[in-house]
Length: 188
Image (cartoon, rainbow, N blue to C red; front, side):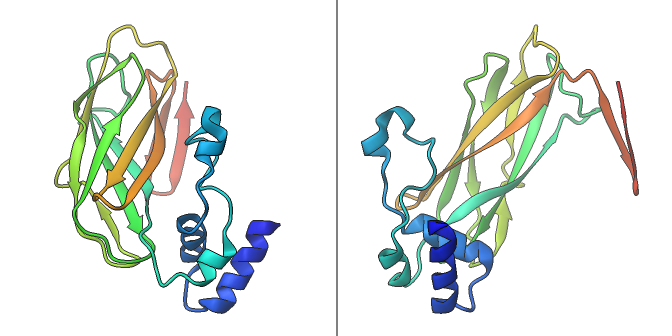
């Protein structure tokens, strides 16, 4: 209820902002409470809502991961020995951003990161950019269990702006999803 009320007030203050921009503004202006909850640092969202900061903000920097595409140049069933190319899309919701770099990491023992860094193009407000010119690359290790879900962490920064996002990939799936035009099916 607190966030919903703050979002409603911000929408009246900034009527030209989209809903995603209002959410971004709330996150950018939130008070960091990680030091007060060190056991949960990085796991409890953007922090405590600070409506005063949000209403008085003249902008801010906020970009987040909005999509990821994976490809092994074969059948996209990721098994031991496969090299996976990963493209990530980022959407910039507030002030224009430049000089961005992204770093990919994973704590999974079944993944080896070959290329975990990428330069991200400059992004205007509400623009979506990606690392298509500089894809991440990982290799699936041996003896990966069936249906192993691997979490990846992407750190995005330009020195002043810092953001961390996560996405998951399923390895060694015991099923196949087939999609052609508007027809889709799963085979196990």
